[in-house]
Image 1: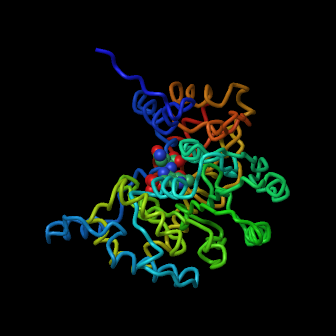
Image 2: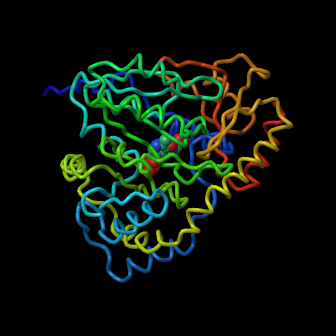
Length: 383
Ligand code: PMP
Ligand code: GLN
């Protein structure tokens, strides 16, 4: 009997670097400062709340748009944070994580041949999400080492085929954040154009030094053309919950939900019921940036006794570092070697460039217990 062969939709794609480096960290018993997740426990009250609602019987499907009281809590939170009113009924959909929200948004918008502007380094799901829809990524480098957007280059790269600009602030892997000035440039450029924005804001609350988060949700005119994607995993230290949401205009959300309802239909009920109440606790998300800023600063201090040159991080739970005073190896080789030889796993930043641009930079995740960061830095001092 003959077996059918799959013609790959993503022929150039291998296994994501996060799985590769976490696998290597486990294999070599290394400290994992690679994949982005906290190594400490999530909020106890939220955990207990989920258990409680499961025991009370909240274990069946909710509507495909998401549990309404949770959408109401999100709408209240958005109004409090960004002074914009969004309808829980027509503008919010609960999704199984931020990655899924981004994929669904791109799948909703894109037709074959459309162009999508992506800034590199870029989170590794964006380009495959574009390509699987038959669309074409148009790549623009963020200016190294501050990783800023050159808006003149954006103007030059916009063509009649441009359908989407992807944004990500706070940015993974660099920790760069967009400023009010960036948003001004964006508004001016898009003013007379039929271009959508997909804005990845999963690190909304992980922003430091009192910098305000420039959410698309602050700008109702931009929201009209945007899908804005969030993740509860990042906000509540529970990345394994894979729960998030997407916000858009009512018209765009109708189309988003057409795609979503035949993919996962609806998300985990007990977490939604628990979060509906927990979201009202503002301290739980407002304190996050302060806690993570302390971790960033502690890690930077510890890294002073190594030969790494730390780059600036204004948000996310990542900080990048140059290692050119240590080695001229390719960043992938270097990251693999220090995992094996020195017991610290990191992420080589070249994987976030389609062409593999190698600036001799690796990414560290600092959302870890202080003792984890201290042991890791001690090991890195030996390099
Ligand atoms: N976007 C970025 C930039 C991320 O770092 C992550 C982290 N995984 C996500 C999206 C996805 O979040 P989630 O785990 O909720 O899918
Ligand atoms: N967002 C996390 C990171 O950048 C990992 C998520 C994943 O493994 N897909 O490290």
